[in-house]
Image 1 (cartoon, rainbow, N blue to C red):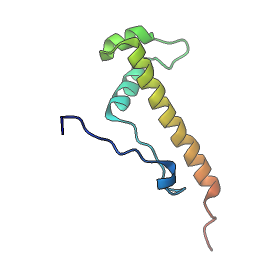
Image 2 (image 1 turned 90 degrees about the vertical axis):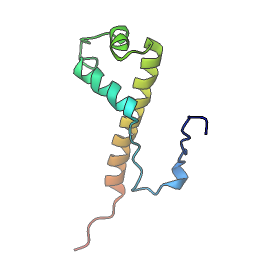
Image 3 (image 1 turned 45 degrees about the vertical axis):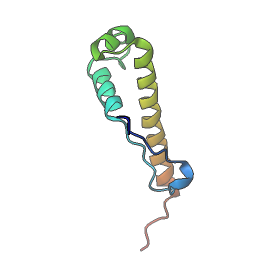
Length: 93
């Protein structure tokens, strides 16, 4: 190949209702960790998007995209875990 890795996209139809968890990419995990450590998610924010983007070495628009994508994955996982708990049959006695 030409140095680029191909990622196989998994459709929701490929996954059963109890085995769907979407992992963060290494970059998303690194950026989210830095954002958390720097107080980006605090109220009020301890660091701006612009300053955080300088810290992680990307443009603000790129950082916004990375954060939104990572946040979506985290939220999807949280919702899926709650739905799975409701859909799981009760343990047999």
